[in-house]
Every structure is written in structure tokens, then in C-alpha cells.
Length: 117
Image 1 (cartoon, rainbow, N blue to C red):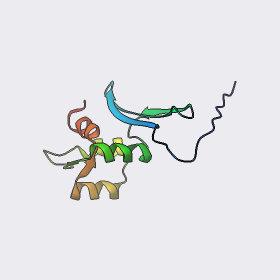
Image 2 (cartoon, rainbow, N blue to C red):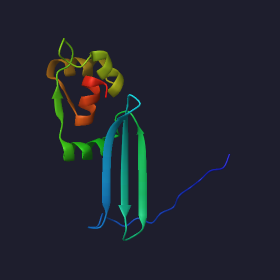
Image 3 (cartoon, rainbow, N blue to C red):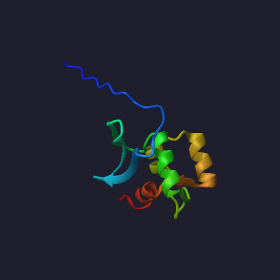
Image 4 (spheres, one colour):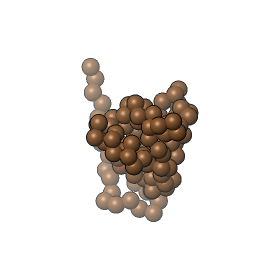
């Protein structure tokens, strides 16, 4: 099996030319996330993507830009508890807390949790 390695020289801090983009979507009935960083000054580019809830550093940037939606959990008008546990990998204690106080999701996550799209 061949291993591939990528070496890049990064500058210390983002400059005014750096471009950062993060996004979430629903594809084929699943949550999808993407993160993209590019610096034209130093010709550095990085892309990352995956399925499910994004890693905390990506989710934090999405929340900072788009905000959150407060969703009720359980009951006839709330997000199904099993779905919330599956998507976020919550423990029983975390699920009980979410049931009591609701759940804060990104707009894309909220749409997925309430409509499946």
C-alpha cells in the first residue's frame, strides 16, 4: 500500500487575504459538512469534509455565522429522542437534559431533524 504525505509551510496567523468557508448540507438523506481554507498569498489550501455532525471547530464557525435554532425534544411537537441520540451520539444524561431544556441546532441540522431534508 502506498502512503501519501502532504507537506505545506503555513504562516503564523491568517492574513487579510485568507478565505475560510464552512457549510452543512443534507445529501442522500444524511448530514454532510465541508470546510475549506485558502491563502492566495502563501498558496496554501486545505479541504476537509465528512458525514454527520461537523467537528467542533467547524460547527463553531457555522454557529457564529448562521446562529442556532432552539428545538423542543420529545413529545408530539419535538425532535424524536432516538433521532437526536443517533445524530449527536448523546448519552442518556445528555438526552435527559435536552428533553428538559431543548436542543440548539444549526439551521441545517434543525431542518434535517424536523423534516429529514
